[in-house]
Amino acid sequence: MITKITNIDELKQMFLEIFLNKTDKVTDISKESVLNAIAFSCAKLAQKCLVNLAVIESYLFPDTAYGQYLDEIAKRQGVSPRFSASGSSTYLRIVGDPGTNYNKNLDIRFHSTSGIQFSLENSFVMPDSGYVYVKVKSEDVGLKTNVDPISLNRMTPFVLGHISCTNEYRAIGGSDSENDEFFRIRIKESVDKLSRGTLSYLEQVLMSINSEVLKVFKGGLDYNGKMNITVVSVSGKDFSAEEFEVMLSKSEQYLSLSDLLSDSNDYSLKLNNPTWQFVDVDFRINLDPAFDVDVIRREIQIQINKQVDYRFWNQGDKVEWENLLYSIKNIEGVRYVPDSYFSPHIDIKVDNNKLPRIRGFVMRDLEGNVISDNNNVLDNFFYPNSIDYSFIDSILTTI
Image (cartoon, rainbow, N blue to C red):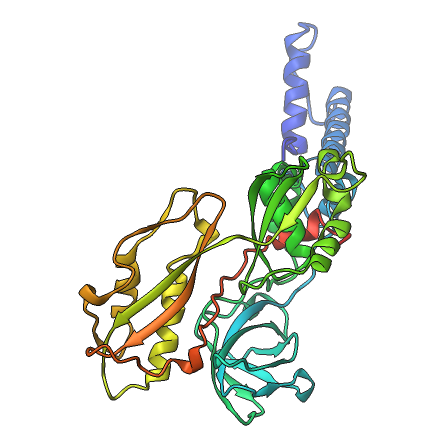
């Protein structure tokens, strides 16, 4: 608080000190005198003025406001109201027999070790790869729903063909009713949120429209003069033309004039799927016979896919073959992987405006015989997106 509330005695002493310094006609002031009463009245009036100033400040400055005063500041500055308690969401890696049907209408629940329950957002059928990433949301609300990684590991009721489930990443988005401290921070940062970089701004806009959006990259200008934006999905799938059209139409009010206008009365912004630079992996391996080959293969594919994480990819980066090799060697159940038979055996430089992706996967024994390769199905990669819930709830409230 800028204005400090002073007690009556101190204010009265200040009045009397100034009064006595300006006249020599008075040398003493008794408690029952007229001058003492005047000093008290002035002190009381000054204190009321200080209180009123402090109340006005509480309506103007977030640092000194609390409760309903913070609500009034947010309303005046166009900041969204206090957030109520919300639930969290995360992605589960579910392993099961191909063709297993996970129907959300069966009230399937996934239980964490802390007792928090999650439910499916959409039904799905297990693909031929034998595992899939699916999004789940908490049944409860509050900060307690942000469960730790590897804690969602039980499903009810049992579905025939289901093997296991786990969350590789922590659940996010869960929060209690917003308290004064966090509400004050959000009010003070409300203007700064609009100054985020163009790409990160567009990224959050598209994520709020389609939760499958992972990342956006600049793709340069095409021959029509349109700015190409590469949009990557969390599961590596390509977006359809209809999905891109929905993204653009719903994001119109958040795009700049230069993004909206072009000579052909169309968007000057063009959304594209990424161009991939494929990497084929072929290696020999010595496995511990006590471990299931399919489980090891699945874990190897998951780990080598994480070695080409293009969320943090920069132009000019390389796919380092040694990192791929070490990620395989560190899998439980892998005894030995000879580097002399490992392909690729050199670092792969990724072309500009391309992103790396594992395409081929051949696993052999030490004699070079191909080990059964899961019906020639290569597991898809998966990277979770980083959604700024505060930005979406504050700025993108109409999407």
